Amino acid sequence: MTLNFDPRAKATALYHGEFRPMFVGGKWVPAQSGQEMQALNPATGEVLATVPRGSAADIDAAVDAARAAFEGPWSKFSPYERQCVLLRIADLFETHWEELSVSDTLDMGLPITRTLANRRRVIGMLRFYAGMATALHGESIDNSIPGEIVSFTRREPVGVVGAIIPWNAPTAASIWKIAPALATGCTIVLKPSEDASLTPLLIARLMQEAGVPDGVVNVVTGTGTEAGARLAEHPDVNKIVFTGSTLTGQAIARAGVTNLKRVSLELGGKSPIIVCRDADIDKAVPVAAMAVFVHSGQICIAGSRLFVAREIHDEFVRRVAEFAGRLRIGHGIEAETEIGPLINARQAGKVVGYIKAGRDEGAELMAGGSRLTGGPYDGGNFIAPTVFGAVSDKMTIAREEIFGPVISAMPFDTLDEAVARANATPYGLAAGIFTSHLGTAHKLARRIKAGSVWVNMYHAIDPAVPFGGMKMSGYGREGGIEHLHEYLETKSIWIQTD
Image 1 (tube, rainbow, N blue to C red):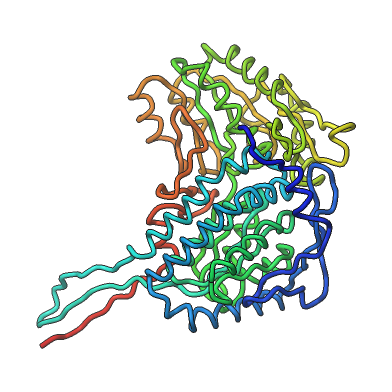
Image 2: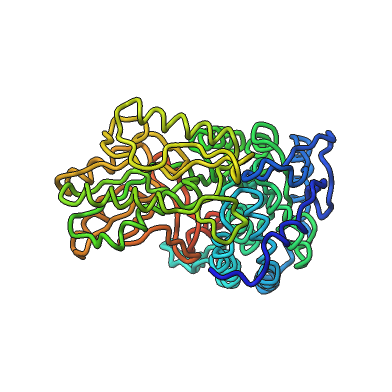
C-alpha cells in the first residue's frame, strides 16, 4: 500500500505521554480514585499516554449515566434520527481515519498498512447498522384464540449494554459493539482492554462530535479484574457482550447470572486449515501463512493448526516456512512492515514458552522460533514468524491457543481423518479449506464444527454476514440481522377488538 501521508509525523502529533481522561455521561473525567495506568507502545516500550484506572465506582457512574440516557432523551429518538447519528459518525470516521489507524498501530502494534486497510470494514459496519436502524420490525401473527383478537410483536431495545473488548482490534471491536447498540436504541458502557485504551477514547470524542446524546456512549478505562468484573455483574446492566479469552468469558457468563442479563461471547479458538491434495499451492501458501501471521498471530480466528494432505505436505510446509522467513518484521508505523510486535512482554514470554514446549515435545522447527532483540527491536516485543513441522495432535502447540505467530503443520491421509482431527478441539470459531473441487468444499464445510468456514480464502468478515463461535468459542453472533436481534427484546401484544 502506498501511503499519502507521513504516519510518523501523525504519530508524533497524536500522543506525548499526556493524561487522557475517560468519557462518562458526556464528560471527560479521571478515575474517582485518582489512579492512572500507562499506555505503552508495544514496539518500543515508550509511554504513549496515561489513562484513568477506573474501578467499580466509575462503572457504577457510567451505568447510571447510560440508564438515565436510555430512559430519557435517547428513548425519544426515532429510527430515522438514530440512523442520522450513525451516518454522522461514519462521516467523521472517514475524515479521521488516518488518525484512528495511527492510534491503533501505536496502541497495539498492528502495521499501519493493515489498520488503514480496515477502513472499508469499519465504516461499512457503521453504515450497515445505520441502514438497519430503520428496518427493525415485529410481526403480525394470526392466532387461534376465539373472538376478534389481534396479536403482533414489537422489537424493543434491551436497555443498558456493557461491552468488554480485547486489545487486538480497538477500532473494529468498539464499533462492532457500539453501532448495533445505537441502531437498536440501547445505551452502552464500553470497557476497553487495559493494553489498548487510547483509540476507544478517541472514538468517544468522535461520538460526542457527531451529536450522540450524553450518556448514550460511555468509555471507562481500567483493568478487567476491577472495572470489567463490576460491569459484568452490575445489576442494572441488561446485556453483556464480550470478546476475549475463553477463561474470562466463562467468568463473565457466571457473573451475568446475578440478574440473568443477556450475554454474548466471542471467545478463543484453535482453528484448523485443511489443505487438500488438489489445492492451488501457489494461492494457498501465502493465505494459510497469513491466516496466522497477520497481527503476529494475535487473532482469535488464527488458523494455527495446518493439516496438509500427505502427497503435498513436505513441499507445502517448506514453502510456508520460506514465506515466513521473508516477512518484514518491525515497528508498525513503518509502511514496509508486514509483522509488528506482540502486545506486551508478558504475551511475548508466553509465546516463547509455547515455542520451547514445541521443541521439547519433538516438533521440528522449520522457521523462526526466536524473540528478536537489539537494534530496531529494542524495547519491543517481537517474535519471528514460526513454523513447526512433525507436530502430533497431542502436542501442547497443537492443542492450546497460543495467540502468537506459531503454525503447527501436520499431514493427513484421508478427508475423514482430516475432519475428525480438525473437530477434535474444544473450540469452534473458524476454519479454512483449500481445494479445487467444489464437491469437496461443500462436504468439508458442512462437516467442520466452526462458526465461520472459508474456502480458498481466509479472514473475510462483512457487516451483513454473521460471525461467532461454537462450543467453547462462545455463543451469539456479530454481523448481519442476527446481531441486531442480540440487542432487542421481543414483546408480544394482544388486543381484543370486539
